[in-house]
Length: 123
Image (cartoon, rainbow, N blue to C red; front, side, top):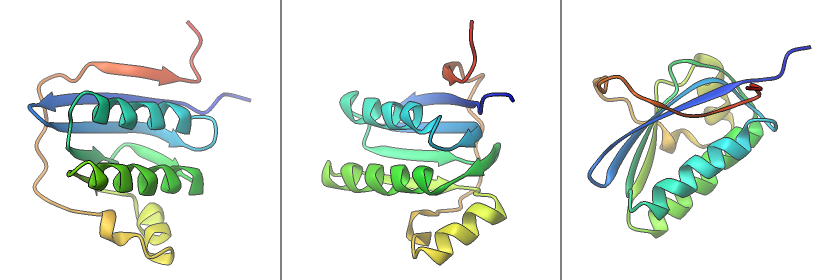
């Protein structure tokens, strides 16, 4: 059985970050997501945009992480927005009354993002 994998790419511009997540968000990978979002706040980032286009799965632990991070970011005077969730994730957001996290705007692609970290991969 293969381990779930989540790749995280972060591209900063001043106090704004675009985070692209690729893979699965679940109990095994959510600590990486939590650390990435916490690091944004420590680095002075106040606007966090999360591109979910390449996410293949997200369970309730991922949803809880997004909700917690949105609250922390709002408390710090910023915002957290989810972009392009899959239809399954969008349905989860609808069922839980969490669609306020979703914001769809024209997509901009940063220049060659560098992987921040990978969970579930041995080196």
